Length: 84
Image 1 (cartoon, rainbow, N blue to C red):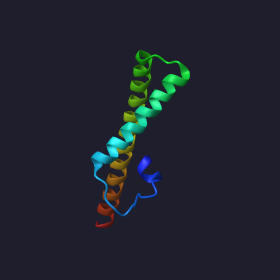
Image 2 (image 1 turned 90 degrees about the vertical axis):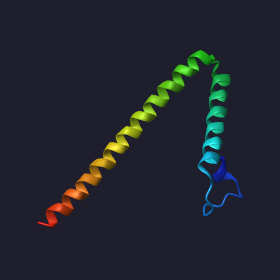
Image 3 (image 1 turned 120 degrees about the horizontal axis):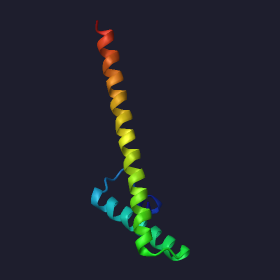
Image 4 (image 1 turned 30 degrees about the vertical axis):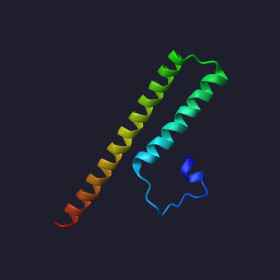
């Protein structure tokens, strides 16, 4: 992300989420445009490719959420067993 590469970026300062989202979105758009131009991919096909990638990302997010939920339940279960 551009903010981390910027020499003026200070990790201790809080950056509004909207700024992070704008920077990330611009990076994604720039990357997508470069891929389209460099590979001669039409916009209609690129939409399908990006939607497919988004679907994979959402699946990964759901898997991570499920794993975190399982970890929390395991910790709670360990605590309850120790309390007996």
